[in-house]
Amino acid sequence: MRSLLSQLSDRVGAAFAAEGLDPGLGQVLVSSRPELAQFQCNGAMAAARQAGRPPRELAEAVAEKLRADPGPLEQIEVAGPGFLNLRIDDRFLAELIHESGADPRLGVKAASPSLTVLVDYAGPNVAKAMHVGHLRATIIGDSLARLFRFLGHKVIRDPHFGDWGLQMGQVIAAIEEQRPDLPFFDLESDGPYPDTSPVTLDDLQEIYPRSSARTESDPEWGERVRQVTVDLQQGRPGYLALWRHMKRVSEESQRQDFSALGVEFDLWFGESDVAELVSPLITDLRERGLAEESRGALVMRVELPDDKRDLPPLILETSRGAVLYGTTDLATILHRVRDLGVDLALYVVDARQSDHFELLFRAARRSGYAPDDVGLEHIRFGTMNGPDGRPFKTRAGGVVSLADLIELMTAAARRRLDEADLARSYPQAEREAIARQVGVAALKFGDLINNRVSDYSFDLERFSSFEGKTGPYLQYSAVRIRSIQRRAAGLGMDPGLVLPPTVEPERNLMLTLLQLPEVLERAGVLRAPNHIAEYAFELAAAWNRFYDACHIIDERNAERRGAWLALADLTLRTLTTVLDLLGIEVPERM
Ligand code: ARG
Image (cartoon, rainbow, N blue to C red; front, side, top):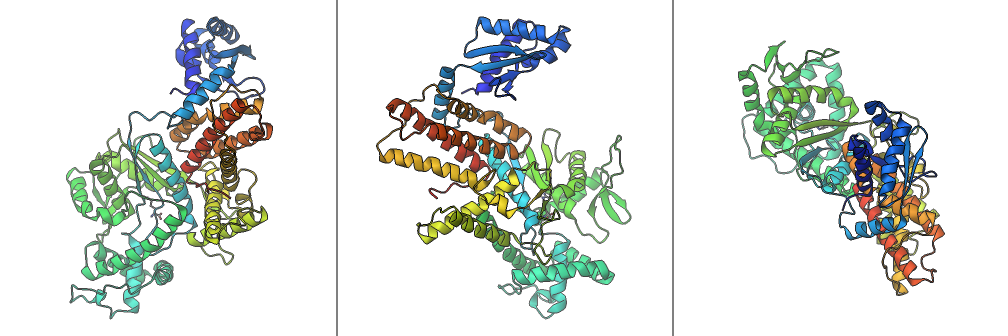
């Protein structure tokens, strides 16, 4: 089905065309002044410039054309300097609601062409548990992946583990220093090596920051770490065997965190998965004269003639022969484009890495590994701060692990459920599952409602509240619709045919439902889940106003009651769909 706005835009566009103007000027929008009109078109202002006629006169002329064949338009008025204010017929509205209800895609048309979109997000590192720094990447990336899939693209979700860089050398060097007797470090032997890990994740969490801090202050240690990194990258068997253990130990904990957040991946690749591509890539760049020596290192220059600032080159290989973050990222682009057929890659990564991606994408263009028709975008985001406006930390000033944060939110959700007297009499396991769902929803919605590039403050109380713009409020709204449906079904009341609305809250709910296609389109174009979050809230609020005004179960007129139940169905489907796009689950009951 065609969306309401596109149908109206066609009609108004045709009226512009009949005046000899560009039909694109007829674009119709939801009115910014709902008390005056449902829809508006501002095209006459732009048309006036093109045609050299006064805008108001043009708007009148277009309005005249529209009035001659108004179709579903019930009101066509010119206001102010030349706005067209429009209102549609209630019968038409009901028909569209009916059509949208019959459409499994809720009126959202599938993208054409359908692209292969790779979403690179989360980006945890081996030897470190995930912490709040990975939270936004995970939540935003997951939502964008869901959105692009819903819009009809083929989506590949890849976490791009940090598993091949200096941090590996940092940990291996430290373990070797402490326990040189371990078989992993015996240069005489090439295996077999112990099949249990000599370190736990907790050990790694302790070793890594210590070793990393030491590199700062102890140049000899820095040298050692760099050499170990190179040896690992060049395949020293004992290091590789130890590295595999560290990777497994880290991934186990990361998988748990992802599963607690309801986040999944299609690939489970890291930097090391392109290790074999690196050396042919470097040869290729050398042969084509794209790589050059600079102070002992091998680099690729990426500056462009009209750069406003100095950009350093992308370092491909250090003098010692180590490959860096940018090298594996470049090889990953080659792999994604050439082997996976990716048309668009979205890198959902902290804004502080902007320079890295600038260099990387330029290198990918210059080398031709990403032809111009492949999109490469850094989807950057701001920081999650604590209540004090500084990056979120524990009371003691440490980094908060993701697992602890989820636990904190779940505890808040339990308390909120008790306060609101919800789920009290349910079996313990169900109660606990609901608390988890509510806690995760609070966390995700608290994040996604913000414009992604802004920083925001984590606010446990506000995020977990059942009132206001929060995840729990939206879940609760959906659960309430479900419980109305159950009560109706228990009384033998069935959904029927949608009828034209009779009161304003009902009309407004219908109009809000029909905004879905443009909301999702906008969120997709801007790569901005906050538009979906905002819409979810508006929809829930519109439903709640409707339900206050229209007491479904008490309604005596069976046809009207059936129409309202149909509206309840569509509202619930739409709300759960948009919440799902935000990664938020709706409990069966609460
Ligand atoms: N592991 C990186 C970090 O923790 C993030 C990876 C982002 N993705 C990428 N292709 N560079 O900062």
